[in-house]
Length: 165
Image (cartoon, rainbow, N blue to C red; front, side):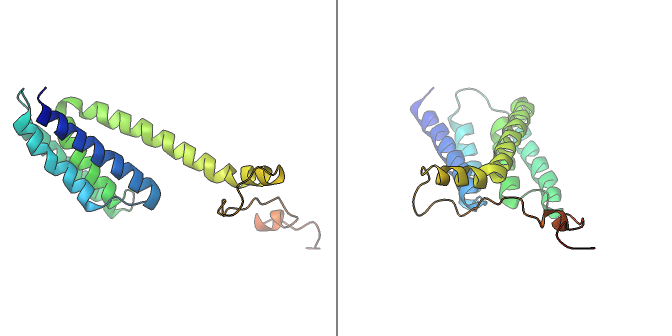
């Protein structure tokens, strides 16, 4: 594989890592990252030593973008996610698209589960670490642990045990 092709793929990898980090940190993916991902594809096609089915990949990317646009309009997906998935569909092409969707779904599901777990337990973990004197001082988590109170049934819509109904 020629060096310029390696540099092109390294650029793609760099853009995807930056997109992932930005998305995790800011919950958005800048247009320059999605646009850069798409803009590198013609360079890849030109440098590839083997023929690339670019027309099918382009048609697939347009279809993915249109489906994603519908999901964005229904507020199911973010706009940056739609654009990035369409740009990556160019690179995956028709041959690797099913694998791309499978890996994306499994990875997204795993990250979602990790985020839910962390959201649910981070306050409790922080409280225990603080109690043990192991929590970082200052700049720690702003999430505080909450213990169940006597108001818990009231918050759930039930009667409060300390107040007559």
